Image (cartoon, rainbow, N blue to C red; front, side, top):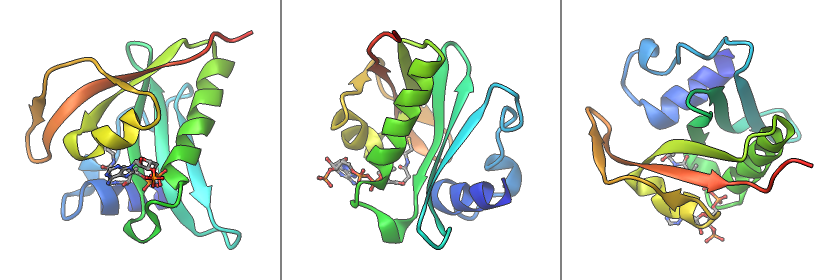
Length: 134
Ligand SMILES: CC(C)(COP(=O)(O)OP(=O)(O)OC[C@H]1O[C@@H](n2cnc3c(N)ncnc32)[C@H](O)[C@@H]1OP(=O)(O)O)[C@@H](O)C(=O)NCCC(=O)NCCS
């Protein structure tokens, strides 16, 4: 968890205090954290799935040095598999405006007007519909 928080904080909350990188649900039994590692166990990307009005994706972060290599997409694929395993038919997130293209490229749809998250900027609710679990 310390390594997840470190990467999440560095990418998503630079210069902000630790309480802003730690989510209240991080230790919930239903919360799932996924990480992308190098063969040397360096952590390059993280995401968190938590149960909130369905299944919410939070804390999607890939190290700046490692972007555009498919790590974010690979983490999303693993998240979809976990969601289907738990019989969710979709997952949603509050997407930063700068990340909308990333999610859209993987089939997510925008479901809200833009809204401001103070200190971070414009966001949109986005959703990914999944095939039903069999
Ligand atoms: C958004 C983020 C997680 C994407 O991770 P990534 O590992 O770079 O993504 P991928 O390499 O899997 O990209 C997959 C596709 O998404 C799209 N994409 C990714 N980053 C993009 C960008 N900055 N602008 C436009 N399209 C982008 C592209 O279609 C890309 O495919 P391509 O590289 O073949 O063109 C990463 O840039 C990041 O951590 N950003 C800062 C934190 C952030 O904004 N997180 C989301 C909060 S809601």
